[in-house]
Amino acid sequence: MGCGSCSSGGGCGSSSKLGTVPAGCNNNGTCMTSGCNKLDIYDWLVDMDLPSNYKPFDIVEVRFKGSRKEFYVNSDNLYLEMGEMVAVEPNTGGYDIGHVASTGELVRLQLKKNNVKPEDVVKKVYRKVNENDIAKYNLAKDLEWETMHRARNLALELGLSMKISDVDYQGDKTKATFYYTAEGRVDFRELIKRMAEVFRIRIEMRQIGMRQEASRLGGIGSCGRELCCSTWLTDFKTVSTAAARYQNLSLNTLKLAGQCGKLKCCLNYELDSYMDALKDIPNNVDRIETVAGVAYLQKTDIFKKTMWFSYPHAESWIPLPVDRVKEIAEINAQGRKAPELINTEKIEEPKAAAPDYENVVGQDSLTRLDDKNRRKKKKKPKKKLTGENAQAGQRQGQGQQDNAQRQRPEQRAQQNQRRNNDGPKEVNAKEGPKDSNTKEGNPSAENANKPRRRPNNRNRKPNNNKNQDGNKEG
Image 1 (cartoon, one colour):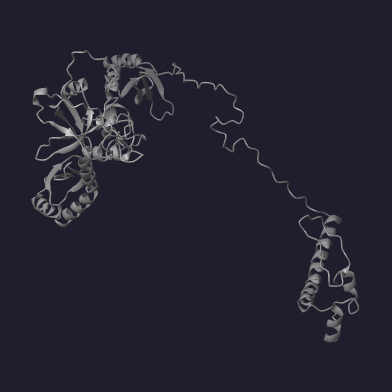
Image 2 (cartoon, one colour):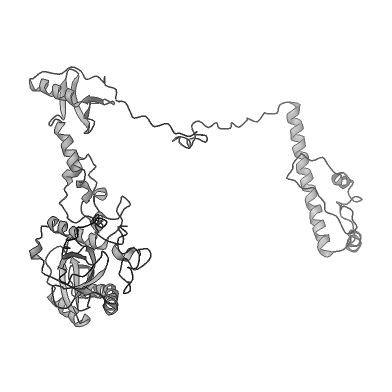
């Protein structure tokens, strides 16, 4: 995510030219699409008229790669706007380049939020960037991907149990910060020596946690939106499985874990409302004693304040309001049994709102694809032939088989005649004696060549085979 994910390329100001608005959104860094400006804030004071004798606040907030933000003093009173690139004073020598995140009174509120006193801010804003600064900045950012992979190979060669997840070059290309994750302490002194020889820059190693790694890399969560830690979440609070139990969620680690491998931060968002609703729910009422037997707690609806109980080997659950459960608990505490539980309360289910259109094709029906109501076509049983009809059917079937056997040799003879392209009379004269299947040799062949009545079959094609003289071949 971050600036590099802008669909128009370059992000907000990462490849802008001097004197133009930042590339990407082309809205001077205030598009607020959560992809261009990571951890950005909305300047709701930008359209307010300030007093004439008002002195602007001389501290600005500058944003760097990832979620890193720092405060700097604008000692030269430069006119800065959100999204502009400035050269600032780093922790070590040289200069660094970042984007202005907020100015004016918003910075005063940000200092108060982060518990930072204005007197503690000592680093300064040097100047607005020029073309040479932007060219060097872009060249340094292009080396980050290759540097990270080469550093990973060096760590593998030394056998270090660490994962280098990101590299951040300083704006003047004189220093690089390597962010890594590891389960324990890692002795990377030899690794720093080799990286200094290969890259010829100052090296700084910084260990981060799994949540910080997901915040820097970004991604899409199971809800379909960008990760909270990479867009607006700044503080990471501890999340325990008790938060899932209070909200009646299944303790499935695959569903409760986020992209960082830890429990999702969003489990804490609605935890306070659940804790307030649980104050009215009685504790230690997993079972209640009645005249009919012992009923066990099956389910609790916190917001409806309803608890479901059931007897052993019973299929139905009996809903009881919280007040009734408290009364039964007091009766059991006195050593008495409560009367039998009866399902007297009817819980009305919310009725679905009727659509304001006419459901013509039944697209709102959930059972429209079921085959229960469809009528299946029943196959009619075949009538058995009896008596004279059965004998006639057998004769007809035998006659059709005889005709098929008689026509097979005739069809072979016709195919041979077509291949030789000769008349039938010349072939008979050369071959000598006539075939037994001809009209003269076999009188039954004459009856076989007569057209017979065929059953009505539309797919059967008529026999249109003709010889060269235009007559049907016999």
